[in-house]
Length: 339
Image (cartoon, rainbow, N blue to C red; front, side, top):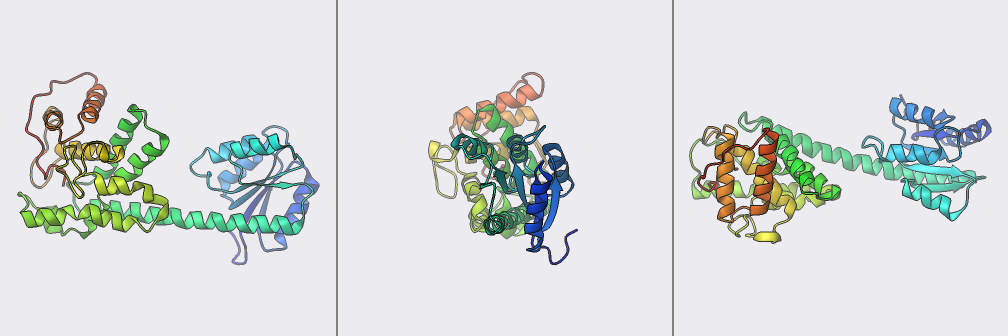
C-alpha cells in the first residue's frame, strides 16, 4: 500500500540492472513508489499483483520484448488505460511506428535526461488520474441504474438482459466495435432517467392516463441530461434519448422516423420491448416467447418497428431456442409494452 507521501506508482521494466537502478533513483527522489521488473513476463505478473499508474518499458529484452508486453496490456480492459512510456536506445522511425501501433503512449530515448523523464511521468500520471475519475463517474451511473431497477422486482435484471441481447444482435449484424460498446453500455443506461418518474406511475397496474404517459415519456430526456455532463459517455446519448422512437415516426421524444433513428437506438428499443413482453409487469403477466415474437412481427408489418431488425432478432431468438418455433400473428405492442 502506498505511503501518504507517494506521488504515484511506477513500474520500471528493463533487463539492464544499471538502467533499472538509475531510473528508480530518479523517481524515488521525487516521491514516487517504484517497482522493478527485469523482463516482460515478470512485468505482466507485477501488473497483475498491483496496477501501476505509469509503466516505463524497455523494448529490447529477452523473452517477451516491450512491444509484446505493451500489446498485451493495451489489449486488456483492466490495463488498457495505464500509460506506457517506451525507454529505448532504438531511434528509427519504424521502431517508433511499431510502438504507436501496439498502443505506446510516449517514447524516451536512452540516454535520457532526468528532468525530461520526470516531466513525462508527471504528465502521463495526470492523464491517468483524469481517466480514472471519468471511469469512476461512469461506474456511479451504472450503479445508479442498478439501484433504480432494483426498486421494482418486476424489472430486476431487465437492463442487463437488454444490454446482453442488444450486444448479441449487434454482433450478428456485424456492427463495429464502437457500435457494440454503445449497445452494451447504452442498454444498461437506457432507463436511467426513470429516477425522475414517480413510483406510482412506474408500478401502476393499469393503463396510464395521458398525463401519466407524458410524465413517463420525460424519462428519456432526463436520462440524457443525467449523462450529458460526462464527456466519456456522450456517445451513448442517442441510445438513451431515442430508444422509444418508432420507425413510422410515431415515437418519442422527437418523432424521428426510419433511419433517422440511430441503429443502436433502434436495436435497444426493439430488445427493450421484447424483454418487457416476456417478463411479468405490474400491468400484465408475461407472454410466451411465441406471443412476444408475434407482436414484434406485427409491429414490423405496420412499420412501427424496423422490419429488418425485427426479423434479425426473431431469427436469433429462434436459433438460440434450438430450432424455430411457430410465430402466430398478434396485435402491435401498446405504447406501454415497454414503459
